[in-house]
Image (tube, rainbow, N blue to C red; front, side, top):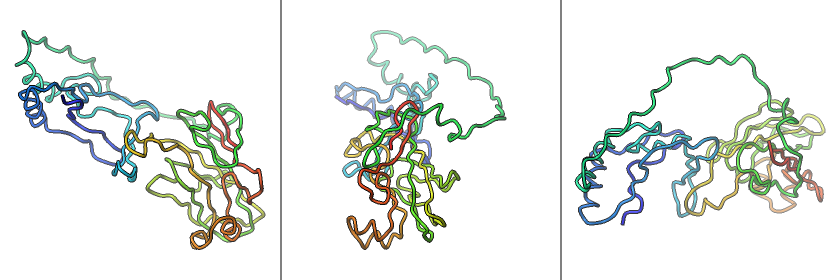
Length: 287
């Protein structure tokens, strides 16, 4: 029995749409049936993953390395496409399957007509920070940055906050265990975007005074659906570092943090019991 006959594949952000030749797929389907096996077509009907439920794959399922987030479309180059229309692949599969039918196969109904192309003009906007008290839940506190799972957040955004002590010269700001994407703000101004397996450092964060505040608005792209990566949590896996990378690499433990003047999520200046504020719409604000 063929449990998953892959007639297409996932599409990942930043890549081309994946297709499988209709006749080649139909010939492979015919070979399975001619051998007397049963088959489950995956996917027979394409669909849509709404919001942040799209999931992800990894380039190396054995190690979970090489994160490949899936787009919201789950068309999968299926015989019945995402909107419910039949395709050339559907016709090719039908020609194979009708040999095993007891009688004539019915013609499929046409899909609903497509909406006409239109243009929507956005005239107003609202900053997240201006609406935070209206859309976020209460703060939560933890000695280390809590994951989305720790906060009970299935989807949406979590806002982590912290302070970098000063005065000090510019150093990079990085996050340990980035999963999956974060917009970084320093004193309320946009400073950069961090992405898993891509840009993971905001360069040259200077602190001219005693301290500077920073925020990370965290969004998940989707958890890996197979292999070791399927057990990984979303959100930061460890502290944030605002330090010279050479200092971080050459020291260890608490001494490393003091020498590098580390500003950590959940370890503000390494004070016992200090924690990071994080806030999530409908969930928690983790402090």
